[in-house]
Structure formats: C-alpha cells, structure tokens
Image 1 (cartoon, rainbow, N blue to C red):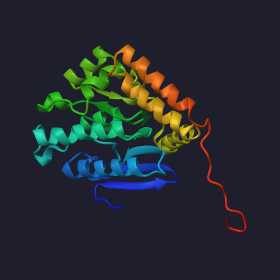
Image 2: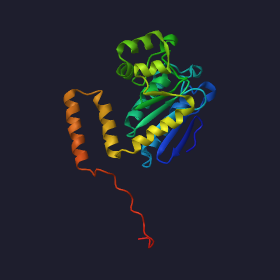
Image 3: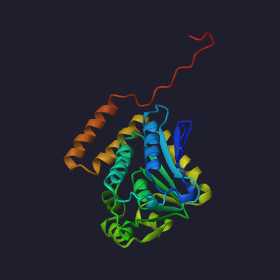
Length: 249
C-alpha cells in the first residue's frame, strides 16, 4: 500500500502506520488526514491485522495542524478531523500510539483516541489551540478530562501549557515512558502481549471500555451481560488452521 504522507507496514499481524511529513514535524494537512483515514480503514478490514501501532517519522509524533495550509478552524477541516476519531473508535482492534518529540494540538488529540500511549522520554504534550484562536477537536474535550481530570485538562487547554513525558505519565495522559531507543520495541512488546490473549475477548472488552465511558450504569450492565453471553457461546481458545499432511488432503 503506497502513500505519500503515510508509511504503511504489516509486521506479521501488527499494522504499523507512520505519519510521514518529518520536515514539518508530521503536521496534519488535508492529504495526511485523508491518507491516515485510508490506512486506518485498511487496518480495520485486514483480517490478518490484530493490533495497530501508529508513530511519527523523524523527530516528532505530530505537531498538530499545519497552519500554513490556511484551513485551520474551517468547518470542513474540523469535520475531517472528527472523522478520525470515529474511525479510531470503530476500528475494532487494539491501538497503540508510540510517541516521540512533539505531540501537540491535533496530534495530541489523535493520540488520545488510541487505547494505549507509550511515550519516549523526549516527548512533549500540549494544546496550543487557544494561542492561535482555534478550538479542540477529535473528542479532546471529553477524552482529556477522562484521562487527567477536569482541573488538569482545563490547565492544559486554557493556558496552552506544554508538559514533558514524565508529567504526562504522572497525570495519566500516557501509560508508560521509555527511552527513545526502546520506543518501537516497547510498543511491539505490548502488541505481542495483547495478541497472546483471546481475540474475541480482546475485541469485546475494548468495545466495552469505549461504550462504558458514554453510557449509564444500567446500559453498561446490559452491555456486559450481552458480551458475557457471546463469550460463553464461543470457544475458549481460537481454533488453529489444520496443517495439511503429506498427502495434501
């Protein structure tokens, strides 16, 4: 699969999607957004892919929207950005962000749409939107308070404060901080741990987590019951393909 602003790889059953505009710190423009959407759809529909890792080429994960494109804040761009969140939540497979360098604005909003976030020690997080007269997209006003609490979310968004990786870990914005040299290996190790679990259970539990944050307690209980019924009727382990014997039957 060939793109200009995205690098698509499949390492066995892990899809690795790399944002590839390193000269502008992987800033988002219309082409990057559209190609990222295509890559997410490809990962969602590829039956061999069980986990998705997204990272940035060069010195940054994503520095936010490219203001030189001249489309910052318009309705069409906002709609494109919101579609990213819908695709991420509906992808049906665990997602991991491997973050180095700048992870700002729309880039940080994208990162919050992932199930897990692993950061290199040089990572920087923040939301400069208020400085440039823009607002938060990608469900950031919901997800950031869920991750770090309303007070800290207000501080980050209203003051445009930039925080380092260790602070992001302490606040709950990222799951783990590692050295830059170990970032890719750590993301892949987590992907392998996820893959070692039952695929159906992983799928349903991920679905349940995202469903739960926007549901009432009664809705959650009903949803969990439905999931329990599904898993109780499924094999406890996934069947393996039967190897052909020497006769080829």
